[in-house]
Image (cartoon, rainbow, N blue to C red; front, side, top):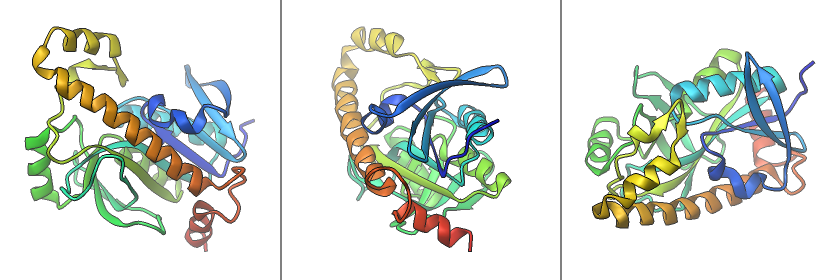
Length: 246
Protein backbone atom coordinates (compact mmCIF):
# COMPACT_ATOMS: atom_id res chain seq x y z
CA UNK A 1 0.00 0.00 0.00
CA UNK A 2 1.35 3.46 -0.90
CA UNK A 3 2.26 5.96 1.78
CA UNK A 4 0.88 9.47 1.92
CA UNK A 5 2.73 12.79 1.70
CA UNK A 6 1.46 16.35 1.85
CA UNK A 7 3.80 17.87 -0.69
CA UNK A 8 5.18 16.19 -3.80
CA UNK A 9 8.16 17.95 -5.37
CA UNK A 10 9.12 17.18 -8.97
CA UNK A 11 12.45 18.27 -10.46
CA UNK A 12 14.11 17.34 -13.73
CA UNK A 13 17.64 16.77 -12.43
CA UNK A 14 19.00 15.88 -9.02
CA UNK A 15 21.61 18.63 -9.20
CA UNK A 16 18.80 21.20 -9.19
CA UNK A 17 17.69 20.17 -5.69
CA UNK A 18 20.83 18.56 -4.26
CA UNK A 19 21.36 21.22 -1.53
CA UNK A 20 17.81 20.53 -0.33
CA UNK A 21 17.76 16.72 -0.35
CA UNK A 22 21.35 15.78 0.50
CA UNK A 23 20.35 14.91 4.09
CA UNK A 24 16.93 13.43 3.28
CA UNK A 25 16.11 9.75 3.40
CA UNK A 26 16.22 7.85 0.11
CA UNK A 27 13.98 5.03 -1.10
CA UNK A 28 13.90 3.21 -4.43
CA UNK A 29 10.48 2.01 -5.57
CA UNK A 30 9.03 0.45 -8.70
CA UNK A 31 6.10 1.79 -10.67
CA UNK A 32 4.99 0.34 -14.00
CA UNK A 33 8.30 -1.44 -14.47
CA UNK A 34 10.50 1.59 -13.72
CA UNK A 35 12.57 2.25 -10.63
CA UNK A 36 12.23 5.69 -9.05
CA UNK A 37 14.44 7.35 -6.47
CA UNK A 38 12.41 9.13 -3.79
CA UNK A 39 13.87 11.67 -1.36
CA UNK A 40 11.80 12.01 1.80
CA UNK A 41 11.76 14.11 4.93
CA UNK A 42 8.76 14.69 7.17
CA UNK A 43 5.73 14.80 4.93
CA UNK A 44 7.61 16.09 1.89
CA UNK A 45 8.75 13.83 -0.93
CA UNK A 46 10.91 14.79 -3.92
CA UNK A 47 11.58 12.98 -7.16
CA UNK A 48 13.79 13.74 -10.18
CA UNK A 49 12.16 12.64 -13.39
CA UNK A 50 14.42 13.76 -16.20
CA UNK A 51 14.30 16.55 -18.76
CA UNK A 52 11.26 17.29 -20.89
CA UNK A 53 7.50 17.00 -20.86
CA UNK A 54 7.16 13.23 -21.20
CA UNK A 55 9.68 12.50 -18.45
CA UNK A 56 7.93 14.98 -16.16
CA UNK A 57 4.50 13.52 -16.85
CA UNK A 58 5.58 9.93 -16.30
CA UNK A 59 7.43 10.73 -13.09
CA UNK A 60 4.62 12.84 -11.68
CA UNK A 61 2.14 10.02 -12.31
CA UNK A 62 4.48 7.65 -10.46
CA UNK A 63 4.81 10.02 -7.51
CA UNK A 64 1.05 10.44 -7.24
CA UNK A 65 0.55 6.68 -7.28
CA UNK A 66 3.32 5.94 -4.80
CA UNK A 67 2.75 8.72 -2.24
CA UNK A 68 -0.69 10.31 -2.87
CA UNK A 69 0.51 13.90 -2.24
CA UNK A 70 -1.99 16.64 -1.43
CA UNK A 71 -0.17 19.13 -3.68
CA UNK A 72 2.34 19.03 -6.52
CA UNK A 73 5.25 21.44 -6.87
CA UNK A 74 7.28 21.70 -10.09
CA UNK A 75 10.76 22.96 -9.21
CA UNK A 76 14.03 23.46 -11.03
CA UNK A 77 15.88 25.79 -13.38
CA UNK A 78 14.29 28.23 -15.82
CA UNK A 79 15.58 30.63 -18.43
CA UNK A 80 14.62 34.28 -18.16
CA UNK A 81 12.47 35.84 -20.87
CA UNK A 82 11.89 38.98 -18.86
CA UNK A 83 15.15 40.98 -19.07
CA UNK A 84 14.64 42.19 -15.50
CA UNK A 85 15.11 38.68 -14.10
CA UNK A 86 18.63 37.83 -12.97
CA UNK A 87 20.51 34.56 -12.42
CA UNK A 88 19.64 33.13 -9.01
CA UNK A 89 16.30 34.90 -8.74
CA UNK A 90 13.50 32.56 -7.65
CA UNK A 91 10.06 32.98 -9.17
CA UNK A 92 6.64 31.48 -8.52
CA UNK A 93 4.39 32.24 -11.50
CA UNK A 94 0.65 32.75 -11.41
CA UNK A 95 0.20 30.85 -14.67
CA UNK A 96 1.91 28.10 -16.66
CA UNK A 97 1.43 27.80 -20.43
CA UNK A 98 2.19 24.69 -22.47
CA UNK A 99 3.69 25.91 -25.76
CA UNK A 100 2.93 22.58 -27.48
CA UNK A 101 -0.85 23.11 -27.41
CA UNK A 102 -1.43 26.54 -25.87
CA UNK A 103 -3.16 25.19 -22.77
CA UNK A 104 -2.73 27.15 -19.55
CA UNK A 105 -2.94 26.33 -15.85
CA UNK A 106 -3.33 28.85 -13.07
CA UNK A 107 -1.20 28.01 -10.05
CA UNK A 108 -2.20 28.12 -6.39
CA UNK A 109 0.89 30.08 -5.38
CA UNK A 110 -0.17 32.57 -2.71
CA UNK A 111 3.12 34.43 -3.05
CA UNK A 112 3.25 34.57 -6.86
CA UNK A 113 5.16 37.63 -8.01
CA UNK A 114 5.57 36.90 -11.70
CA UNK A 115 2.99 36.25 -14.35
CA UNK A 116 3.72 33.51 -16.83
CA UNK A 117 6.06 30.52 -17.04
CA UNK A 118 6.18 29.01 -20.52
CA UNK A 119 7.00 25.31 -20.99
CA UNK A 120 8.68 24.55 -24.32
CA UNK A 121 9.81 21.30 -26.00
CA UNK A 122 13.44 22.42 -26.38
CA UNK A 123 16.13 24.52 -24.74
CA UNK A 124 15.80 28.18 -25.75
CA UNK A 125 18.71 30.35 -26.86
CA UNK A 126 18.84 34.14 -26.71
CA UNK A 127 17.12 34.71 -30.08
CA UNK A 128 14.32 32.28 -29.31
CA UNK A 129 13.86 33.77 -25.83
CA UNK A 130 13.21 37.18 -27.37
CA UNK A 131 10.64 35.69 -29.75
CA UNK A 132 8.90 33.80 -26.94
CA UNK A 133 8.78 36.92 -24.80
CA UNK A 134 7.13 38.83 -27.64
CA UNK A 135 4.67 36.05 -28.48
CA UNK A 136 3.57 35.03 -24.99
CA UNK A 137 4.49 37.96 -22.71
CA UNK A 138 6.02 35.29 -20.47
CA UNK A 139 8.59 35.94 -17.76
CA UNK A 140 10.51 32.66 -17.91
CA UNK A 141 10.79 29.39 -19.79
CA UNK A 142 11.26 25.78 -18.70
CA UNK A 143 10.47 22.34 -20.14
CA UNK A 144 8.56 20.46 -17.42
CA UNK A 145 6.12 22.59 -15.41
CA UNK A 146 3.20 22.32 -17.83
CA UNK A 147 3.34 18.51 -17.74
CA UNK A 148 3.27 18.50 -13.93
CA UNK A 149 0.41 21.00 -14.01
CA UNK A 150 -1.56 18.75 -16.38
CA UNK A 151 -1.27 15.78 -13.99
CA UNK A 152 -2.23 17.99 -11.05
CA UNK A 153 -5.33 19.22 -12.89
CA UNK A 154 -6.37 15.70 -13.89
CA UNK A 155 -6.10 14.56 -10.25
CA UNK A 156 -7.70 17.65 -8.72
CA UNK A 157 -4.51 18.59 -6.85
CA UNK A 158 -3.24 22.10 -6.06
CA UNK A 159 -0.25 22.99 -8.21
CA UNK A 160 2.65 25.38 -7.66
CA UNK A 161 5.76 26.08 -9.75
CA UNK A 162 8.93 27.37 -8.11
CA UNK A 163 11.81 28.05 -10.49
CA UNK A 164 15.28 29.56 -10.17
CA UNK A 165 16.71 31.54 -13.08
CA UNK A 166 19.82 29.79 -14.42
CA UNK A 167 20.31 31.92 -17.55
CA UNK A 168 19.24 35.50 -18.15
CA UNK A 169 17.37 36.70 -21.22
CA UNK A 170 20.53 37.71 -23.08
CA UNK A 171 22.49 34.53 -22.36
CA UNK A 172 22.94 32.41 -25.48
CA UNK A 173 22.72 28.80 -24.38
CA UNK A 174 25.13 26.28 -25.95
CA UNK A 175 23.45 23.69 -28.18
CA UNK A 176 22.32 21.05 -25.67
CA UNK A 177 19.19 19.32 -26.99
CA UNK A 178 21.26 16.67 -28.77
CA UNK A 179 22.69 15.59 -25.42
CA UNK A 180 19.30 14.83 -23.84
CA UNK A 181 18.48 11.14 -24.35
CA UNK A 182 15.30 9.66 -22.85
CA UNK A 183 15.08 12.63 -20.51
CA UNK A 184 18.63 12.25 -19.20
CA UNK A 185 21.38 14.76 -19.87
CA UNK A 186 24.51 13.02 -21.21
CA UNK A 187 27.11 14.96 -19.21
CA UNK A 188 30.13 13.05 -20.48
CA UNK A 189 29.16 13.52 -24.13
CA UNK A 190 28.52 17.21 -23.56
CA UNK A 191 31.88 17.64 -21.81
CA UNK A 192 33.64 15.98 -24.76
CA UNK A 193 31.75 18.26 -27.16
CA UNK A 194 32.72 21.35 -25.18
CA UNK A 195 36.36 20.25 -25.00
CA UNK A 196 36.53 20.03 -28.79
CA UNK A 197 34.77 23.36 -29.41
CA UNK A 198 36.81 26.16 -27.79
CA UNK A 199 34.33 28.78 -29.02
CA UNK A 200 31.79 27.65 -26.40
CA UNK A 201 34.16 27.19 -23.45
CA UNK A 202 33.20 30.55 -21.95
CA UNK A 203 29.46 29.95 -22.21
CA UNK A 204 29.71 26.42 -20.85
CA UNK A 205 31.75 27.59 -17.86
CA UNK A 206 29.36 30.46 -17.18
CA UNK A 207 26.37 28.11 -17.40
CA UNK A 208 27.95 25.79 -14.83
CA UNK A 209 28.51 28.71 -12.46
CA UNK A 210 24.98 29.98 -13.04
CA UNK A 211 23.55 26.53 -12.33
CA UNK A 212 25.26 26.39 -8.94
CA UNK A 213 23.90 29.82 -8.05
CA UNK A 214 20.41 28.84 -9.17
CA UNK A 215 20.47 25.53 -7.29
CA UNK A 216 21.51 27.15 -4.01
CA UNK A 217 18.91 29.91 -4.36
CA UNK A 218 16.14 27.47 -5.28
CA UNK A 219 16.86 25.16 -2.37
CA UNK A 220 17.08 28.01 0.12
CA UNK A 221 13.62 29.12 -0.97
CA UNK A 222 12.23 25.59 -0.81
CA UNK A 223 13.57 25.18 2.71
CA UNK A 224 11.81 28.40 3.70
CA UNK A 225 8.55 27.28 2.13
CA UNK A 226 8.67 23.81 3.62
CA UNK A 227 9.41 25.19 7.07
CA UNK A 228 11.97 24.36 9.68
CA UNK A 229 11.72 20.69 10.55
CA UNK A 230 9.72 19.91 7.40
CA UNK A 231 6.52 19.16 9.29
CA UNK A 232 4.74 21.35 6.67
CA UNK A 233 2.11 22.66 9.15
CA UNK A 234 1.74 26.45 9.27
CA UNK A 235 4.21 27.04 6.42
CA UNK A 236 3.49 28.99 3.22
CA UNK A 237 2.86 25.75 1.31
CA UNK A 238 0.46 24.47 3.97
CA UNK A 239 -1.43 27.76 3.95
CA UNK A 240 -1.72 27.45 0.18
CA UNK A 241 -3.16 23.96 0.61
CA UNK A 242 -5.70 25.19 3.14
CA UNK A 243 -6.79 28.00 0.81
CA UNK A 244 -7.05 25.70 -2.19
CA UNK A 245 -9.17 23.08 -0.42
CA UNK A 246 -11.71 25.41 1.21
